[in-house]
Amino acid sequence: MASDYYKFVGEYYDTDSGDFDSRYWENPILQKIRQDFREHTKLLKFNSALEIGCGTGLDMAHFCSIFPEKTFFGMDLSSRMVDISNARLEKGKIKNGKVYLGGADDIEKVFPKKKFDLIYVYFGALNTVEDLKKTADIIYDSLDTDGHLVLSFVNKHYLFEVFYNLIQLKFKKAFQRYKRVWGGYSPTKFLPSKCYGAKSVRNAFKLHGVEEIFRKGYSILYPAWYRSGWIKRLGRFASLPWQIDQILNKTPLWKFGEYTFFIYKKN
Image (cartoon, rainbow, N blue to C red; front, side, top):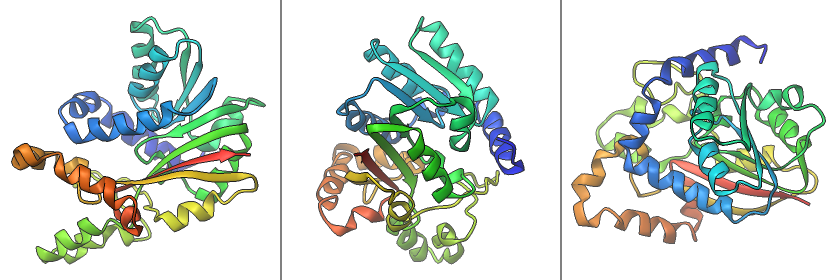
């Protein structure tokens, strides 16, 4: 975690950690998407798992609790997030999980010679790496044979966002994800990141012996998490866009949502 960039990302999330959980529990869209991530992950066979970008440890604590026979490790660039995660595990008297300071590029340093049979990344932690191909190689080397990668990315090609902003004549905002450097979600705090389309993700993880076994798009039509207020406006029709997305995921339109989600297996 030596680079100035990763230090900046860590400090950014240090300041973001204070109300991180409260914002999550107030957001039904984030909750629905996170639970869907989890359901797909639970279907996989594993004994030792690593979460990259674990935040406040919500998923670590969840998986540790329902799989007490398995071991879980977490990493985050934010020292404050690491402290909150470990405090959550300690408060829940969870013994099969531990969180460490670092990012994806630090796996070999933090866990020398260790192999995991599940590595998962929720909500786009890999959008803040310096070189996705290099990071993919590091992750691959840390994955055991027959192990699985579960990866989510903030999508470059989010068509709803493009058209929604074009209709409002917000041309700059419509194409901000296509910039070389994306500033993140916050309108007031700049987080230099990069959005990736499905093709870029697949090219980075097109590694020897790795097979893509599942892919899915989120918020193709269903509102993005930062439009959680739309759910109330939709009233009794709130579940309809989610159901439509399940149909769209069977078409080439799956790759035009707000998030893309992939599961890879190392053969």
